[in-house]
Image (cartoon, rainbow, N blue to C red; front, side, top):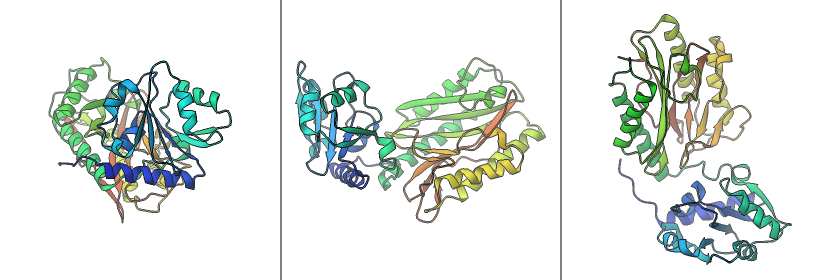
Length: 372
């Protein structure tokens, strides 16, 4: 799938929408630090994030402004969103906080990127003791949660690349090799299919699969092992994250039973996706299937998380998350059952909400894949 670069107009629309959301939340404005938020609003990703502060200000009373270190201005200027932003630079030896304070409301309430360094926030608070700050995720959790069609296309491309990597990994030999060796193969396949960054390749074999976030290790995979493969990274700037559980050689009746319970839970949760349904309802549906089968106490995590420029972001499919699904939201559906000391099963797809339901962005088969 070929995707087009984001334009200045795309970034302007995002900034304008953010200002409206901030006002509706009773905020003075938004302070954006390097990281996924700054990439989202400008396309600018500093070559290094250091003690020199870069910060963009979005509020309804002025055009967007971005404070940048003087020596980094040449890097910021070519960013596609920078054409709609006034760049203000500062030099070593000056106080960037004094300059920032002159641009902010001393009694304002701002949402600030979660990735902001504490030293920068404290520097502002010292000069503006009457100001208040809330985390971006806490104050504006839906800011990046609803994707436009171009973002969904990128997530679909990332999902297709992860699927292609999976189709290759199931063709390699598992038995007699370490988890780490298999994980290295999987990372190589992800890169070969267009991932610029591999964030994780979980290979949980046998009893290690009962730890949902097991780090691949030196355990040698054996015939008869259930193996959880959970992998992802960045492709065209957007995240992939998928999980499949394979079996080395024939599986036992119990393993087939547990696998089928998880498969049915994942399918039921997917079928529940539609606009207006609360996020927590998707979790409830998946959990009900597993509870009814008698494995509820072995499902030990939420059903899913949002994905976009980062692998984990709002919305979260968890009890207590009442926000409704809306078209354009993208998230994982990944129920699992983990039997301590024995094995685990998890099946995960990225799903996007459509006008009348859901669409999977991962499309490899859900049936148990037997590997050698």
